[in-house]
Length: 391
Ligand SMILES: Cc1ncc(COP(=O)(O)O)c(C=O)c1O
Image 1 (cartoon, rainbow, N blue to C red):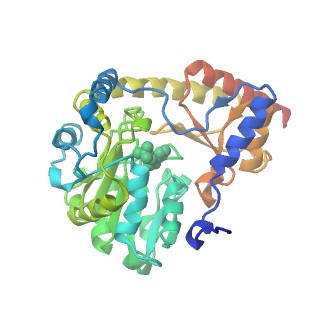
Image 2: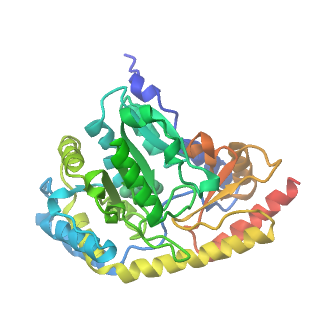
């Protein structure tokens, strides 16, 4: 019997990251030492006390049953206090949805808020899962280009009224993956104004909430007055807290959007592992200093990489947030996929081709500072040589 995938699945392209895994394997087989600057997962963390809490909870055999869909009151309380302490935002614990990772929650939000053929406005370039999840849900994607000259922000005024009118939501993410742009309070205020005027829900993915540099303040869209009437914000503990494998995240804000997300989650998941809930509670209650230390390390690496790029004459913007450099391929260096493949097969250094993040990424590559400084320095040396040989 032949089994064919659904039309919705056939509509999405294979993930470029699976192809990169094959190049990587070929490089390792050739005996090259692979230095992976392609991955988005952080290498710093988790915070020690959170690990201890996770271990203690995991050692308790009573913590292996299904947990309530609502999560734990301790974690909900920790999130309410965290919002107040870190962003001076007052939220109610009823307007929080706990999630086993934000990728799944963001994906299922499509199903919770939109019907097949509805339109959603998604940034380009962007975390690839936004567009693929929307396509799998049968939605029409209106591509909103992030503009280099606007520090990788969109031109909101340029969104046609008829698109805004029919869109179920607009999704934006700062600090940004893959461009490394941070945002400003001014932009968030304009975004909320635009959303109120056009009556469009904003889904704000704040995955890298504290990973900001050069005095860019960590920001929550919910701190803009009235934002809870037009916005939902997603946070994850995967990045700043270094807990990607624990799969813990949450969304807060607009009551009806959160209620719809909670309702759909019930059909797709069966509660979050108790040790994950407990570890996240400790991380949010006590992890501020550990997060600040991690950001200091990322800052040091970012500065070192920027200096080395300057030395090899590769023009670039220093990221204002997140853990990525978004590098335009120097003229004549070919197209992004061929460049990354050639680099990996020749030197063992992994970068991500920009087109993995959308049409707008062609001719860019993403370099992640999620490796120790010595390995970043070695990788940059190899990249410099590779570029030199291609002159
Ligand atoms: C912008 C952005 N949002 C969401 C996620 C998903 O994070 P998680 O599912 O680990 O919470 C990622 C992961 O790379 C990301 O870069």
